[in-house]
Length: 220
Image 1 (cartoon, rainbow, N blue to C red):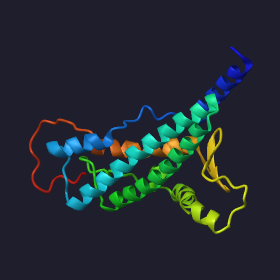
Image 2 (spheres, rainbow, N blue to C red; image 1 turned 135 degrees about the vertical axis):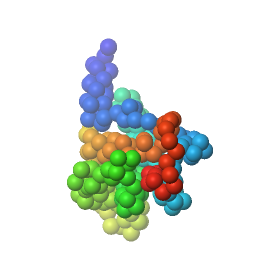
Image 3 (spheres, rainbow, N blue to C red; image 1 turned 120 degrees about the vertical axis):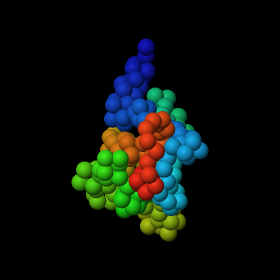
């Protein structure tokens, strides 16, 4: 093995450690939720609540897939040095951040509707018990999303220096845009938290027992 190949492998190993994989998460949430609705397995207290749950599941699935594509392309660039892989990684990560931001908005709306589990416990934990809903996390995600959304206008209006990268910069352990930074480990952890709540909205469980009386169910 040449020295260059050895160096590349060391770099790939480093990146794989710093940018956690989300392969363990389900990537077909939307299909499972659609199947559950078709089978009548997901009780819908109202059309509005069900629609919001649909949107939340869609965005969480997208966040997972976009993150994984960003990771795959970033690793490919590190291994082989093809700029197209880097550019695709930047695009996918930008889409991932957008999806995480929008998923958080949906999750907050679901929480405001007061859905509860069968034992009466709130389906969505309070922000103090769920990191992704804390104000400082929402702010960081929103600021990165806004910066990416406004980047084109800032460039066209001459608000940025000519040396500014056109797109989110991906490093060893974090993404950055100007002074804003998001570590890969943080983003992966937040997506896992969003997924933990999206998964039960999607899975189909066959349960035997008495049919609940009308009005007893208040889940999504």
